[in-house]
Length: 319
Image (cartoon, rainbow, N blue to C red; front, side, top):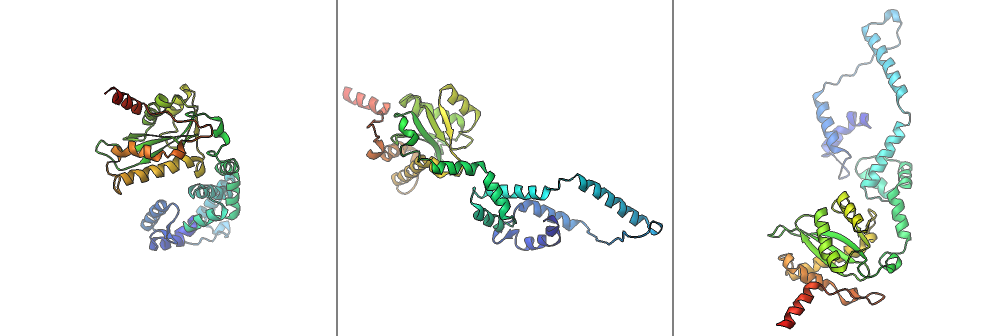
């Protein structure tokens, strides 16, 4: 591949703006650097006849013989399976970068980017892929949000959480931590300036632990604001089972993802078609998102009334 690139492909790639079939070639920056270096180096090729008697050999022939001997020694040290391993490495990269697609889709994705792979190497990578195995197992299992494992939880014991991104406010807040109760779909929100593990813990303590009690299970994606030592330590200290979703398996986070979409739509509607004043409208949008059907469970458990509403009702009755 390198030899072909040096003697023919580089010029073709350069003329095509380092693209193949309209898509960037693999490792384009590295090839650009190689092309720049090759342009500045004088490349000369000359044939040396190695089959001459020693009595007629000159310095050039002797140098050529030394190079041949050195090459034989180095080749003997090389793993003869290097080409197969290299192809598996590229196939593994293409399979992961393309989003863990099937064999044909991964092959097409690689071809569109100028990477030639064999179907056999792609099949082997997919067969050995732990992520693909986990996705298949999850697809065979009963959907999480329709009975199954969630039926054993009572209200407030299991939550799914995520972050959504919105336009930055005057106070510098740009993210909203969304928290969905598993058995009812009850929504809690917490706006923050940055999606960090500390803000995640603060939001969970204020919106879940203080209002609904300590949960037994929290699910999230694999973002750095969720998957780190600080979160793991905090969860362990509170006796919470923290479960990370399977990458590239959208149904695992279906409940919270659907809620995020509805929340954004509601905020935009309250802002007259924009996200203007979204922080001021967040509390109202959170309540509007909670339709009566979302509050029902099999055992007819009802979410607790937020303490802010109780305090407001108490003050109104006193006055």
